[in-house]
Length: 414
Image (cartoon, rainbow, N blue to C red):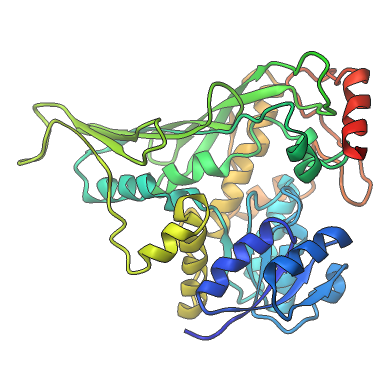
């Protein structure tokens, strides 16, 4: 494989991802971050001769084959488009586009380029999710009718270190993210396993504000949103975006006409495979619990990487796609990525409208693109100073207590 030159935009998560590309023989040639302190810390972590940039315009002029986009969660699309215009391949962390209009622009720009685009969604590559894909592919579950994906990641409201590192100013996106938006960790794995694409979405949120003398400036008082999709194959998904209830876990379940498979909620990576007595394959057990094997030539590198091995495998898929000259398979391709973003964005609109079902557009068609090409509604502040145009919470008038906000600013300065 060619030794690809990789640039990194976003010196926090981006540097972590870059380590996997180095393991795969790539050269990290440039690092960009608007924050000087984070840029210096990222450069020190890379510990290599890397060109450093404070502005994207200068960074994008560097000689490189691909860019890791690990900037703010909702602001990837404009930078991906700039990469396409330069003929640079894109590895985009988290959500592909923050507005519906950006989804249209992203796909139109990609079609004019010869670039590989990949959503850097790593959860489908966790050990138990890979096993679910294998079982679905072999067909023993029968026709897939239903699947669940739950990314539950509660955070200690008194974790000052987390606030200083990840929510370091009041208008940060984490203080304004709707419950439906952080969706790819829950939706991506079941799309990958089943091959189904959402066509309609409805959602309800769990409103539960942080109470007491707590440092917070969050306007996003929904601890989670429960999202249901109807899919192109007639199946139904139930997914949880960024869940903040109960205890931390990642849970997935896939049910067919003949059986079901799910991972155990004990952090063991084991799976539970079940059939009915009348539908189990010959020689199979009716109920079996086991730890799958990786069965991968890079097993040791996978085990050493982040997110249950997903970071390394996702980087490898991206490079293999570039090498082969084709786009990655769903759900990592650009249309799957924009579909997931549409579920997130329109799911929140369903919440605000009392849970009504909303059609997910197919941006393969010009008719759908025209419908959304000017739709720039956003719950986020922009880095350009622009303000939110829609509420981020199911209770639109919610605001954190003034004393909580004051304490938030105090701990950031402490």
